[in-house]
Image (cartoon, rainbow, N blue to C red; front, side):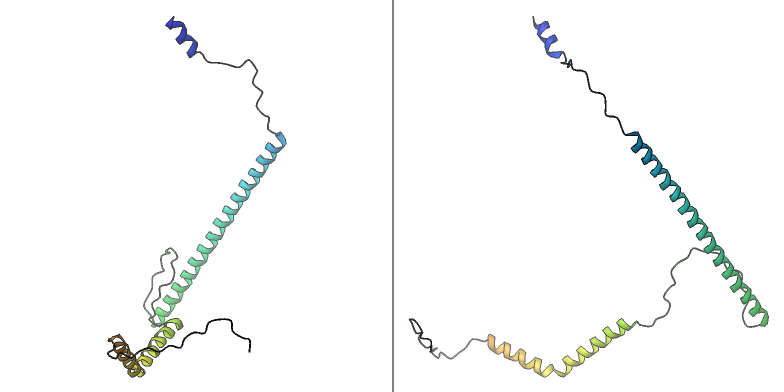
Length: 161
């Protein structure tokens, strides 16, 4: 009897209703999506080609300028003005180093403002000393015990005189 009960609980229930066929994709939309993807791929390839051409042109221009500079340096060296310079080896482009030690306008203005504020403090030092002394006196306990007089408040409705 135990064998029949276990067999019943382990069986899987299946439906007698046939499964509906999966939804069909619209073939026109699929074709349009493929066409758009192909156009984007071609545009991306074209853009990469243009970038490669531009990089090649820029590299050639840098080499040409470097050769001109080397040629000019050699001509000047022949004239006795400078030593012979080997043509430069092309290196990756890097931002120019800030070799000059001059200050920018903003830096000059900040230095000037610091100097002006130091001068103002120097000229007002007596005022500052006086206020510090007043603060110290105010913190000291008051010795006099004078009564504080206050006027009584009027009660009632006030007239509109």
